[in-house]
Amino acid sequence: MATIPYSLLRPARFAKEIWKWIEVTYKFLSAPNFPGDVNVGGDLSVEGDGAIAGDLVVTGDTTSNKYTLSSPRWDDMRVPLSSVRLPAANAPTWTAYKGSFVLAFDGTSTDTIYFAVQIPHKYQEGTDIDAHIHWVAEDNTAGNVLWRFTYSWANIDGTFPVETSVDKLIATSEVTDKHILTDIVDITGTSKTISGMLLCSLARIGGDASDTYDAKDAYFLEFDFHFRTDTPGGSTTEDAK
Image 1 (spheres, helix red, strand yellow):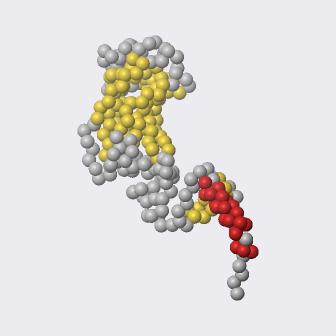
Image 2: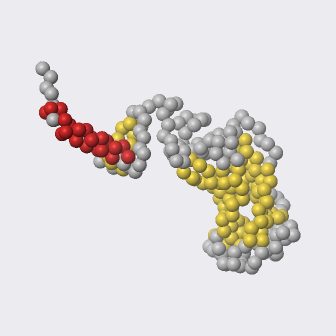
Image 3: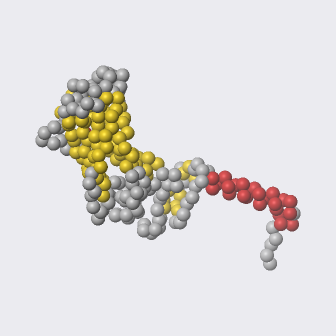
């Protein structure tokens, strides 16, 4: 014979217990805290803050199960000094600076570097990327530096278009040795996918009349692309998201 819980015989107490259960369930779903390991075989959705003291293991078919962020984050695709190619002529020169070396772009000529980057697997496909340069002016003399950036972006099995050229005129800093970050351009990522390639160049147009940081060098430190990521750790398959 089935036993009727005592709480069901007292409606007021039963209602109170139901509301308590709803409250506990809501708190768990909005800010879960797990003292040990957690194994998830299906979907796990956390609406608020949560903490897991042990391991989080998500199992399933790698072609259908994804670890994604509903609010994507920003990350960097970096092009350090060691990754750029210098042409045989009209190249910036390696210059000692602060115990290391930088590439000095001349103020009276057009110096150019070349580089390529691959779009990482954690890139949120179809989103724009932000191209920017890290650099330092030789001193605190007032003036403008004219940077020219070119790029051509193609997906796997796509075709590379004619390169796009973007000029950016930036004032030098009144503070000596200031680390300057200059946003060059937001590049449209519509229809772009992981593992695509960007072919790029960066030049200082030192001989241009608008480049008024005359006879002074601009020290190149690094080029970067900010991109949105919605799958920390990479894609679920080797060649696709």
